[in-house]
Image (tube, rainbow, N blue to C red):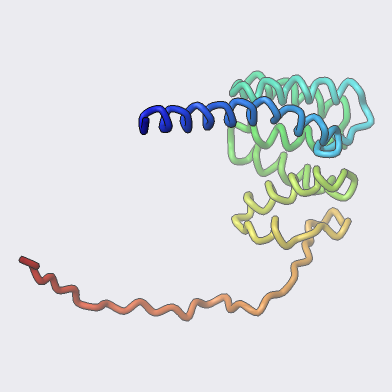
Length: 171
């Protein structure tokens, strides 16, 4: 009898997991376009090129994707996400810095979601992830950031101490 009960439990778990997996798309579909970041560009051609590049980048074809990102920013020089694409597919540090800096200069002209992406990439470039979390672009292209102040000290008060370890065998 115990083995039947265990199999019944197993069957019930599998059934719940299967039904739950099928419900996933229904829940995700209900959110609609509200969970998507808009693509801010004045050029439909730039938008299409960017989407083709993003599709290739998601398939780990960065070199091919870069060509589309280059064409996208050529079609619209104020297309911040195009520059983010260039930064993410850059072959050198200089290309990464140039593309990220250009995108950061455009951060005041894009949607909030795009701005968060840009600021996160810029903070990573600068090695300061706190800027991505606390910072907000002031709207100027100078790259100035405003940050909330916190009460935490920049110097750690932790002083490691070494305690001797002894091992007493237990019989």
